[in-house]
Image (cartoon, rainbow, N blue to C red; front, top):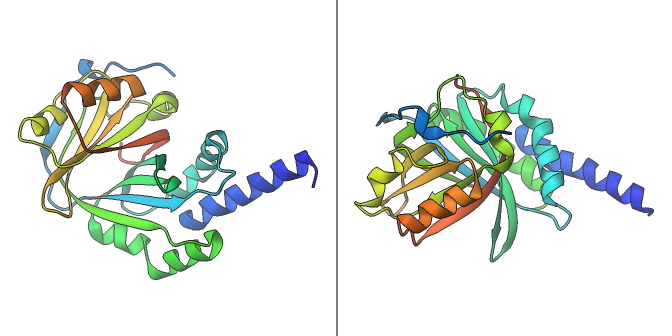
Length: 225
């Protein structure tokens, strides 16, 4: 197979992988007050699928963008951050989803969805559910996430301490939005979307966050405007 043929094959297979699961300027977040409050019914899901060897970042971004129109039509999906993450087990990709309700999320992740993804990818994805306890947004409702997305990262800070929790819900340099969630061990964690990696790293260091996951989130979809 020639080099052009290999590249074409990679792009075609990459599109199939993403669609199977789907069947700028740096903002100043401190300029907008946070909108925060208790939320009882909404749910966050984190989906991870093992990435094939050829899933280079530029290819993932290209394929993420191709399926954005599909996710714009998903019932109950308020926000999605398309992600990739490097772990000890290798590279994974997927999404961090904010749902209007757990019921709508579970309707989307049906047995048929899992079977279809596993058939096309050769491996079953993982879907972790987290009850949304609190949230805060530090940009206005008309903020253009697509214009800012290319440099964005999301950190999942686990087992928040009493001192760390309130800081996650206050304006921080580069912080766009926060989800405080209930983790499976009964503790609370926070998913924090930052405009840049350096702002995220600075926050983690300042708050002395020890346990966290680091997601590159270069494509963002805001359905709730």
